[in-house]
Length: 534
Image 1 (cartoon, one colour):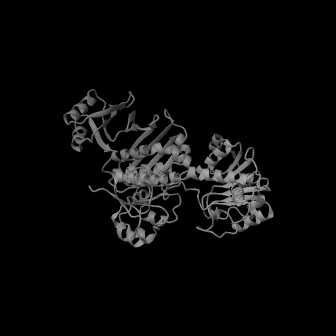
Image 2: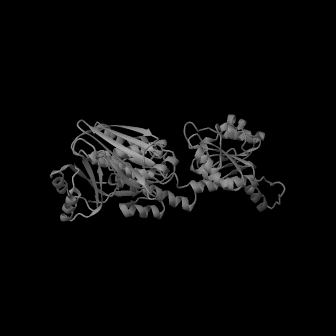
Image 3: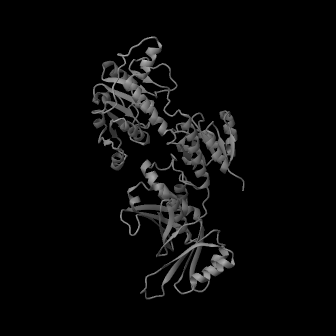
């Protein structure tokens, strides 16, 4: 089978290219113009870009093989995401690539703003010793207001706290527990931060709701003499309103790294003695650039090899803290979906029900639900699956899905149960992850309970609970040179009026031949058998 092909359309760090080359045939198109990209795009399964390549509807239509787009950076304004979603193309960015860099630049501007560093530097090299003119203020015991408490805002808070600052932040999507962990006061409303902040730092994404966030009305609610920082997005600030507040003295100073339109060299605040500006340097370090390419490459690898695409922008947006907590459950969710659907290989599945039990029920589990659906569809022969096209493919096959949550679970902290229903059959399996390495374990199947670590190859038999059944299977496996990694049996409780059934779960280091599974499943005492490669 020929290897998949990936185009690296813009220059990124060597680490990202090397990662792609481990998995795919890679071509570098750093100097290609739009027409060259359009002509060659049909040859590629994935493409890695930065900000210069504009993947609009026309180019996406040309990319007939395209399954994954990796954006080496945070924004995806240069990708027609709705069009990509219609085509089942995963669009993933690298949202964590520049978080440390942006937080550090925020701190650099915060210190420079407090101590008038750029102004003093310019004065001194111009031949003036203006020591008294540029006396500043301490950060110690000052209050930093943070609007937008995502990864960057949280890193800024940690660093500001080390300077002895009081930090008050507003973000309705972050849990109270996270605020407590960082020692940051939660502002119930943005106004609660405005009223107390000596320094106000914006860390919001650019959306229709946040555009023009810092306007005259907001500035009027701030303390007199507040100092404002924006290392997020230029359109968050209404320039005219900030200029008026600086002119009136309401705002004592500002530090801006981003602007309404870029590049820009002529701005109404350039030249203000109490305004510090930098040319969008928030993400500009060698480390961040290399990290962005590598993280985007990781997402392309995941999308093209059936892994978990954790930063796709065209699947449900999951809070960072939930992504971190739920990522270990993604392989389990996909495995449970595949196993449940395999228990009746011939029937057409009509419904997939996923129960999230225990601690994970408090999280945003939509990503796990999607991966269960992907497992179900893969068991039924669907190819080129991802989190983007799985719901549409399920709908085409008449499969509906429903999730439920329950905070209590017996014996385990967290558990996922998957139930698939066809016109003639209902099958249910359950599992969890165990240990520091989050190994996926199967806990239930065919109504039997057990605990077995899932490996790549899993074979399951249901049989009448009689002596010698496990030995028969082991002998036949050995005769066919199939090495057993682990085996376990789950039994029905005693006291039933009829002969009890048991379930046998076996993991092996190679796939078990279908003929061997059928031979055992149709022999005396066995009811059914199935082998699954996860």
